Image (tube, rainbow over the protein chains, first blue to last red):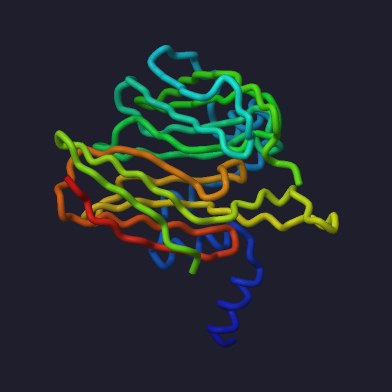
Length: 155
Length: 104
């Protein structure tokens, strides 16, 4: 069997696991992240996403400042900012609880990277934006509702 | 190859703030085109920022990140004139890497 043929088959198969393994093998992303699965990105509810991420019941925390607009006129571009004063933050995840796939992003902060992130998400309808922060091995959350007047996921 | 990112990295009081604007459609796979056909999912799945060979941020994206993803983060260290590299890969296997110079 020819090696190039195998490569093509891997590319054609196109499964995300296969692709991630391939990227890991060329050093484009770290093996840790490639092995860290993406299952939670297919979760249809907060409960499902949290259970796939191995989170029991995250505590609400005042040490997480979640900044989102109260009203989003354009659901396609909703600014989200998360700043945490919790010690030893390793990860910040952002969810939109009424989107078809609730998990929007995971951010991994190595030591020396500050516990803050700003990004922009799509929202199909009025929903809660949830920030999940992993600090010192424990998960904490903060949640805020955003009223969406024009959804950002329709066609 | 994707289109180039815009990256601004500025150091102040020993902390470098990085602002990244990626150019990507970020199709959810749920949107329909004018003919009613589903537009296939096409979105960035992984992002990595590196400074002097060390990773300063890693991210996994889902379909809910907006078109032309925007990120702001901060890390301790960095000096004017030093380089920072940001890379992404999408669910079709396309990838892109861009370099920025830290400013004071």
